Length: 173
Ligand SMILES: Cc1cc2nc3c(=O)[nH]c(=O)nc-3n(C[C@H](O)[C@H](O)[C@H](O)COP(=O)(O)O)c2cc1C
Image 1 (cartoon, helix red, strand yellow):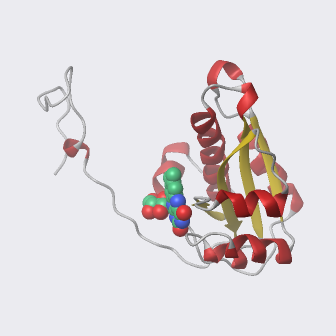
Image 2 (tube, rainbow, N blue to C red):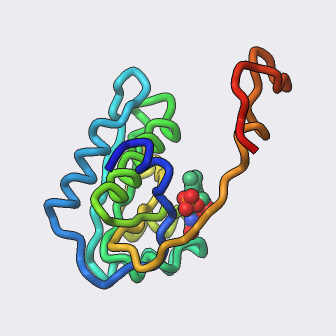
């Protein structure tokens, strides 16, 4: 898939087919994350690959924002080693987005789940407190094709100075 097309058509997928994600595709997702940018190339991320249904069930009960994790055949949990970076959220997010986009390119779908009660997930997965929990990505073959809108460029792009909308680009209405 062409990159700009992939960026544009990737969606948050919350309904999945039961079909498991083959190991070679899981490896491709992790490989995409490995090449994400990070502050001073610190590469502070770590990933926990979860496919065990019982573990996913326990995880999905531990937060209110991602009950669909239970139905996803795969979860990739993104954590960042706080001792390796001063930008844990940014570094973890670039890797998570790489996985999300790669999933789309491979015909999979994914959704970011915010670990709103991180304590529960830490306990279930044994994540030490030196690691920052960034996200849980629920991943699988999509069983929905949601449409999500975006604000228009002219609503949030300025030229030369914040607030100035006069510039060389004429955005389409
Ligand atoms: C930082 C972040 C946190 C998110 N947290 C959740 C979440 O906890 N649960 C959920 O269902 N979706 C979550 N999402 C997915 C967004 O709701 C989704 O990306 C957004 O509605 C835009 O839809 P699209 O990705 O299909 O374009 C999150 C996305 C981001 C980037």
